[in-house]
Length: 394
Image 1: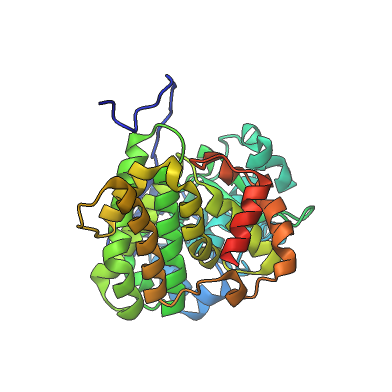
Image 2: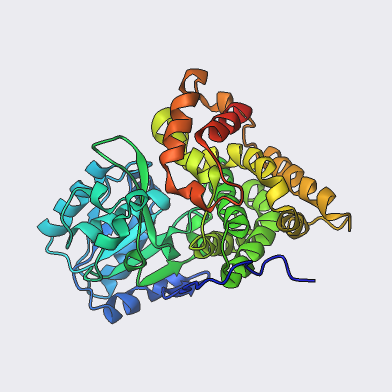
């Protein structure tokens, strides 16, 4: 019998993971060596006020200062960064006469760092580079070096080739996507996440799970992405609840950092309707990205169920299902297991519980349909489908 994951039509797929990854407890101490390898002498540290308050920015600047690097700090990245944040970071880069960017934080800071890097050599506005409009063709490879240091285990932006930003002209949250945005090095140190509060650990962890699941279910032939995605699902299933409830557990934190990294590696294959909805929910209703993904993911999985039964069955097994049931049953179990995991770590079950207004659902569906993420969904979606899913999640 023909394996289910072999494409029915011949196609050519390009696959690449060129980022140098330094992974493990204590990895931060290797930052100066990689900055030197990239000829950084005056880097700009792009981060946010929360990371500064937690003392993590000081840890990074101390390591750099001890190695003789002159590092300036830009700490005005807001949650869910806007084009304004990026322009402010660009001004700081130019004022310091920087020769590279070090991005430190969660997905917002890492994405902002990528886009500051982009605008050092590219003309604004950022809408010119919008992936939904084919903007990747305008991104060149003449960017200064970027090192990414994550402080959450969620977006995996440290190994991703995209930056998410809310555009100034439309207010739409969009993706700027290019292999040239990949960091030259990722310093992934689980010790930097030991102080994360449970709520942030839960939301970012579900974001990592959504990346892994949507990438695994996405259209396309990419066995490398599939392999790391399903491994990421397994890591989240066995460690997220522990990381939320026992935040100083380094083994669980390490597992979650690996899963976040794997999710971002995998989604070069594609994402799906969960991300399209989440990208619309954040600017319209203010729901944090990871939390939005966590709430809509089970609804989208149910919508996709008939189109990817075998893959959903594998997801259930990766999440610890040992029932040896039929594929159709396992597919349903996968959705149930995602819901139970979310409940166990305190994730709200409904969009209404996080402040989304029913009157905004049509607008959310409209914006979601304009988002390129749903193009990878294993079942084609219409704007009407997205509205139905938004209502079910509400």
